[in-house]
Image 1 (cartoon, rainbow, N blue to C red):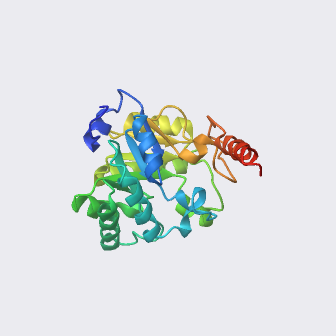
Image 2: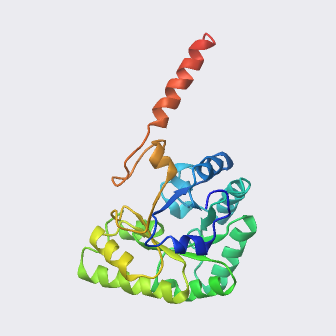
Image 3: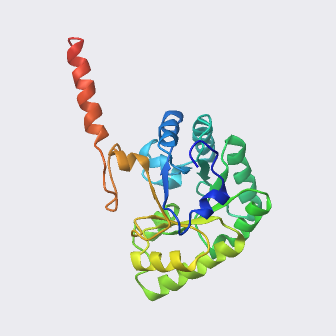
Length: 254
């Protein structure tokens, strides 16, 4: 698929055949680099609130901020499918969900993502009915971190496992093309991956999902304050950048 535009159908065809690597992008140059590396799915995630804007969690991110960053990434014209998060409180009703999704599409997104299953099934149906592809998100829901009192692995209790399956089935029935599983117990993520007809994309959900997604800043070690336990940092760009700047300062006699 190198060099050609990735579609929803392309991603779905990868299920059971090849892992789907996905990373976040919040700006033009990062999108260019990740696309050159052949990443087929880029997400303008509301994680930008923490790793770019300095918010304590994702609930502070506004629609205007999401639009701004989607436009920046879209200017890179990536071959990757470009998805974007619907921010907190932007999809309370089907009507609001469609209006919000259309704003992100107008900014350059090719699909949208929102958190929840059965509770937002009507919104998902409405978004897809408006012709906009939808990416699900189950397990730990960052937009609910305040009410849940932190980040916790889901699915260890039998009731949580049953709820995850019911929510996943609701998303499939509504027409979601794939679903992100965040902080889902690895055994449950494996069961879901085997049971669902759509790709699962894990983050902190074990190795058996159809794909994996990471916050790019976490992968590179540039997140300033906190890197989740499930992330294996592949570089320390923060330290390397600090050293480079120090060398530059010395070179100009500062």
